[in-house]
Length: 51
Image (cartoon, rainbow, N blue to C red; front, top):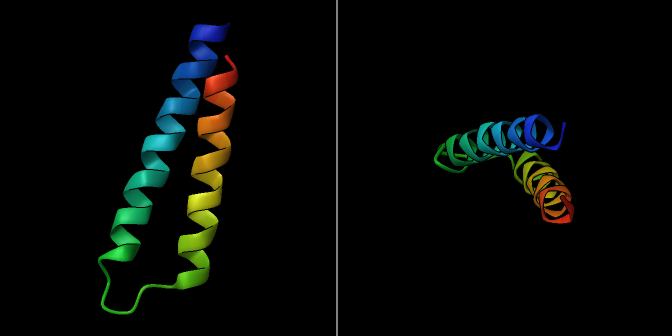
């Protein structure tokens, strides 16, 4: 279970990273969205480190 769970978390982290990069490269990035994506990425990173 841990393997599939960590794989799921890593995939989610990668999707958030892609969204974050896309948003940051816009002409006028949504700073609230950027902050939210960063917080979500951090939570996933912390969850992965606990595994």
